[in-house]
Length: 471
Image (cartoon, rainbow, N blue to C red; front, side, top):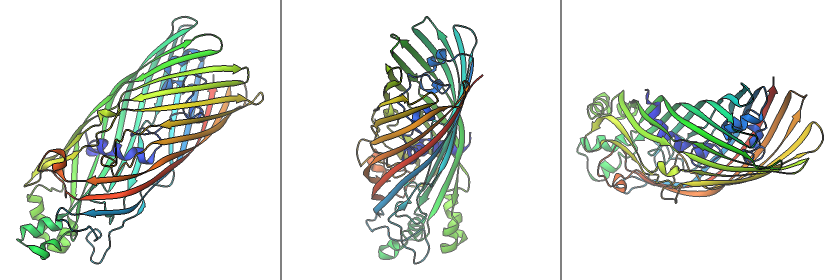
């Protein structure tokens, strides 16, 4: 396994800021569901029910296909940022360039990202249905300027995951259906972590006082961490048609464990330029290798969703969903490097201390005429971040509200198109970030042990389009 996995734990912390759901979930896996703020899991209107409640496949005759793409425009900005070295002086210099100034504000997300999803279901007989979902559960990219005052925490993160989810559903009787599936999850990730090598070299040269302090930020280095991994889990679902008007369902998605192993590459070019090749070689001998191993263990959280649908009249459907997620599984993580660094150890400690969270969504659909259905939804998504002391710089997550609307248009008896727009309003937040390892009950770790603070303003817009076809 390559190093991208060790970024998975840290990367997933960067995911939520750039996506739509709290924690590190992408937020929507279907445009038809997105148009109701993901309240319509009990609807089972197309093959994307494989993700939201796979038992809903028993409502789909024949063979069904749904293909969707979401165009996501996140905006995450930081401002009023400041930081301090462990010596107490402020971080004011850029990334080692003489005369450069550390950036204290900026945008840390890309402008627009396209995210695809695909589902196929097939009816084997009157009782048995099979399906396959290929979708993106986590996806994000955040990057600070290389001269950011917060660069010594995590300067850049990127995460791409894809789930392959074969599922089988059984119609027990006219009212009850159940489903079970296997989830194979592939992840690719990258992170960049800066190090204050100038001060470390200064101490090795026996510099003291103001001369030593002047080495802070003079010759930064950084590690690029990359990797990929497979993890496995399962999903369970149940759907109950109470009567012709009302339907309820339950959907469970298991945790997925990742034992991530890979490598880290330390860049010491600035040290060589400022202090010479001998100083760069000294850092290598101290454990900051051009290429060393790294590993981390994490578990993505399980979730439980309870949802319902009520047909108010022949033209109007109402939806509701409550989802609980065990985000507390991400309470702590350790990024373990293969080489020990004298006086620093070989571990980067992460202590997000997340709490379990919930999402509440309500929505509806109105059949305006024969081909056109209008759809809408509203959701409140509670963040797992307990307070500003545990809000991570790579993921300034906070509570959010979804405002969604869209439409479904029947092209003919076999084909339809869904479109949706969502605005995700994310509560402003503040982060007190720290790399001081004694915060985590240890005295040594791979860290420049800086502290910092910043204010965050975030939002996201999503436009989605989905094509559905029944064969």
